[in-house]
Length: 286
Image 1 (cartoon, rainbow, N blue to C red):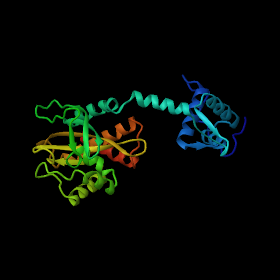
Image 2: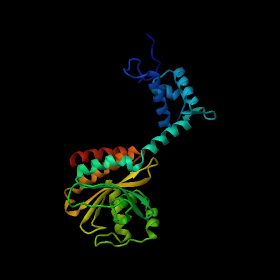
Image 3: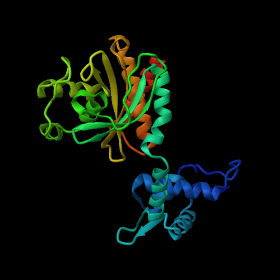
């Protein structure tokens, strides 16, 4: 029996893998490895996947022929090619934010019993671009295209909490902190204190800050650069957002935002920790 080379891990690819084509399994495994490493040498790829060097090189040259990878002559390593980028763009075009978010929002509505909303940032405002209404007779409703100030919105405050304080100040200086209700945060100190709490726990709470009698909980959705691009929220009568229920609702909304982030190819800062916490609280909310 041929001895395995020292330092080479057991290959994750087996000839006996039922229903799969080993050569394709290996090629896709190598493609994913290059993608995750940004760039990698032939030796590193061979050792990390447990595939012989000669086989790894043949696969790489085949992928290179179809522009899925490219060889950097100067650095003598492999990087992702333009065709892999085109494939990713095709996926993104097929799965727009609104379309991807809708099943998650529907599940969020079913779990919480409250209307689920999707909004994107536009300057110092958020614009509602999607909604899944609850069946409760008393419920919140925001027509698509409705705008509201970030500082008095669940999704808005969630997005603001993911930005640097200097950027938040610049966004709000042009419009000021308009008062809508007695609960609206109209001073910088009050708003930034709230944003600090929101950032630490992963979800925002708008307690009658935009409309009397209505409350909202929001969480931020991130893009592939961990930049905030949108927010998902639930809204409804304040009587259903009591102090005992709000933490579990917040965790459920945070989990929905994390799911949407993942589906659009985004990355949330500290997503592993946030995911574990959200999953724990999601179970409690159910």
